Length: 294
Ligand code: GUN
Image 1 (cartoon, rainbow, N blue to C red):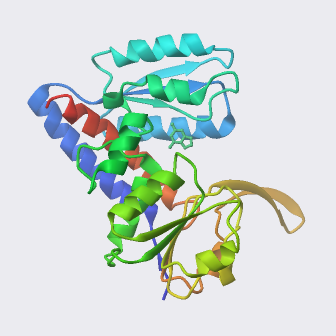
Image 2: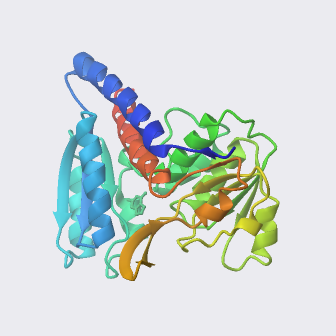
């Protein structure tokens, strides 16, 4: 029987625990963690994510400092705003929703966030720490989506050490940090990408596949060996014809219906990785808050 990994439920448990911890911290310190959420422009998908992140943060007791800036905001203006947030006492975490408009250099902005307030774990110092640390230290600010994937994998209770893990996609946000996390679990890790030769064959050898390429239903049934574990990070909006009516649907990077027949465990889209990303952002915000007391 294929196990459906319920990200929604696991994320809810994580948020419940965070809420309890924040309540205790509030009693002890008189303060709550603060998360500055920065969005530039109005990309529809970003607005959806920012809204969901803001709602979840408030529900667990995190104070949200909202900075929704116009599309025309220039790089210098954005850097000035981040500098203010870096020095603002009630801000423990800063999230700059990506992508940024083309006229702003994303890396310069990510570099400008104080590493201790880096709620996404994208600052070079935190990327370096993740790569160097031999285990996933409680104080590390780890990129939210791959960390959410790791929590789901660990929740399965299967031995990860020695497994062949294939990460499909090499982004800084998901693919590269995911590979680092799996390496720390002593997996044998391969990163496959658009130039990988015989990608089907590479995937077919995997005990664990993490798909993060942004290509709807790319991973087919014959790419996945029997009893592999499949984590689908993709969130792709496609149009489908349902009884002659064109409707929008969210699908992952994995051909779910076909692949789920053979997989030992698989995440659905939606309801898999998405809620975990948000829960891990809240976790990072609390870690940043706690680290500020050390
Ligand atoms: N855009 C897509 N995923 C992410 C994420 O995890 N964090 C931020 N800041 N932007 C994103």
